[in-house]
Image (cartoon, rainbow, N blue to C red; front, side, top):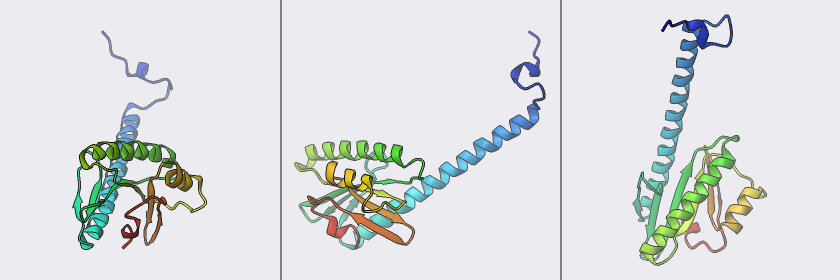
Length: 168
């Protein structure tokens, strides 16, 4: 079989070396961005884990499931799911987080006999008047912590038992 590089491209003036270099740069850039998001995610998890440990809580991290499981005393528990989001990715990431939080709550209820408070931590602000805040708090019974740089906003559902400890 005779190999002809011209047949690989739809553009007659395509340059194989340039296109491969562009592809390599694109892959490298994507990998760097994904790594940066993973590092940011881990920094947020660590910051909240340290916060709750300073309160005297027992903090558990499971990279294969919930980001944080926190236990204050014998009865007060909460699960925290951390999501790094962009404005564009927020709807999809919120849907993913809701599924994860609800699954973890369901599985932990079988183990604990009660559903722990469920909290989503994101690195972008949400306004109190936003439909996402209302949907998460009032419809899904999920708390939200917007942890954007120095500005932190906490929105808790009325039924929350541990929300007074989320921001200390």
